[in-house]
Image (tube, rainbow, N blue to C red):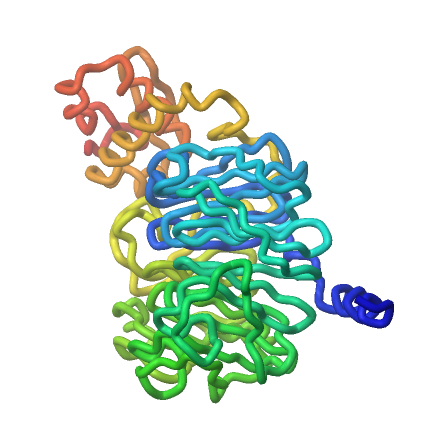
Length: 439
């Protein structure tokens, strides 16, 4: 490499590198994750991807220090702390947050269902396979961003995207359907300078320097926003989208946000937007009605849920089978609901689950909390706690509680010291407010 090339690469890296937004959203098929302005992580949804048990509402997870990066794929979660510790959890990886130490100096990461793509010092990119325990050096240097989903990875180098992995639907954007080994990652050609990228389950969205969106891969139900459903193995310009600043590709849907915070959706909606005047699916981008979703700051879309940050609050809509909406239920939402219990500026002072402690102490608690959540879901206690306080007296533990966490702690004590038969009577010993309402 000659000196001129080195200078150009350094200049380009500076141009395209940007500090990640302090707060971040990520979503998988069964769970959701939020990182607030002060490095505090909230998790909710299915137990295995979270690594802390099932959570129907956003739950603070303490990693012992400030968190700087989060990522979620279909069934997995990755957390990177300020001190450089990388924690991973999910199916086939670990049922509790596992410290992963395979590369020094990790600055970012992206998970798929078999491996994790690691961005390290010097923009070097690695692919670590959880099943084989093999770390592959892709040979890519000076990368500033990585993305991954469903057996594939991507790296952004000086405005050019390099991709590798599974290419069954043309989701690598290389003009063919041939899989590519990680060590032979190939550049996607004939594109403007790319500034951001998002890997959906079987399709990919790219954002160029002029605010235009490019899409390729599986096109079912309009995922590519090109007016059809046939798919493409080469990038297609998504017509009708201008001045876009953020994109997010999920399992069955695509979302884009413009400079004014207006949200555009295309793909399969699963009736989640039916109250917004949208169809079951749209093969071209449709703007969500102004006033419902404008001034959006952040967005992520996962399996069937979409979560946005607006006006300093998180709003969620969509499928909710595993509690990934975060409203305390498993009921699908076809209108955006505001998520309570999240402070976008909460400092790292509140500890719910501390992953820096021995994980053994959480084995029993995880099972207990899962059972507690099931009970709370059944009797819908959560909506009453949000509206008022609850008087609880169970198994010698009790008092007035005003938050879900306080209630859960007392109920957890009940679970520990009571028999299964007694647990079924839980709803008989919870009173709301002055006790005038029995559940």
